[in-house]
Image 1 (tube, rainbow, N blue to C red):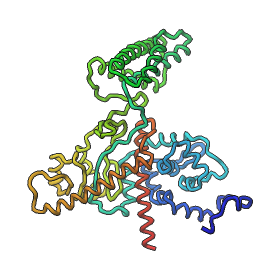
Image 2 (tube, helix red, strand yellow; image 1 turned 120 degrees about the vertical axis):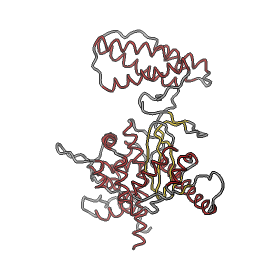
Image 3 (cartoon, rainbow, N blue to C red; image 1 turned 180 degrees about the horizontal axis):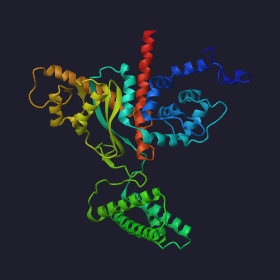
Image 4 (cartoon, rainbow, N blue to C red; image 1 turned 90 degrees about the vertical axis):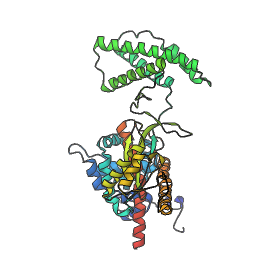
Length: 451
């Protein structure tokens, strides 16, 4: 504590380090922290190969090299902040610069959109199984009990307002009307008359109501559907008459809105719930996932079936459509065995996995589970109960605890990516940033014991 001094005691003589001055001292200090442990645990060269990254052969070199791009994704989830805030911290934090392999010196990065550009690039190249095999190959020496796994599913929610029918229809209507005005202005023709302003006022009044009764909802839905159909028809006429050449993004959004109209029309007139129901015009790949929780019965995001080996979690299946995790038991066992090259002898899972099919599978291949027994007790019931209690404790503490830890501390509580690929990449790096820190701490403990 005697060495720590206030800044005003030496501000007149303090000089920032140069490229070579005390580099080793600063780098050793960086490796001692949690960020340094992640840096030590990640197999950078193998990961670069798995993603297929290379420096550009033509033109100027990118600020972030292949390793720097991957490091920036790990850093995003370690820092748990927005892209803009991440770049601001990178400008002034020497440890962050060490982690990304750059030396800004007196320069500053101003373009914070570089983070999303890198995320888009990596999202197109991500192969989850291939990259996880690479990571496990490097971490295998620090993982024990490879013949024992636990599994469970969770939902990583997207950043999305709660999608009521009225909100969704109004978003479709508002976007379509803005496109109609822009096209008419570009063509130099009069905008067709609609009752858009009238229903805009009505929609604002409805949104301010505390009690939104069913008759009020029905009236608003009927009017929005009729107006949306009219504006959609006007857009179709303009496209046909003037042979408009619009970008792909426009046509993709138009197709999404037409599908939403058909679904909402079916729900309004027949009361049927359509399959593949769209809940957002910007994220048409999202589906309602009914989880049955008391506080949050329905979630909107990616559902992930995970398995954990000695506290290190891996993705078995990721989908934006709802699926029954109980049907993934056998696939999880096979995937874990291919990853570890070890026969699975113990598997922990909650009651939803305990189907007759999964019980027969576990019995056939001699896999011990913590499923509740059916029928009379066996010869070694006491030992079976003890083993089942240990497996259940492992699953309920480490695996389910990892879900909360990743959501609260590794930026997976609300995923703010805007496409299916980048959202998948966001979840992948959030999970494996937590794994890398755990492996890094184990490596530091092993070095400490050896010393």
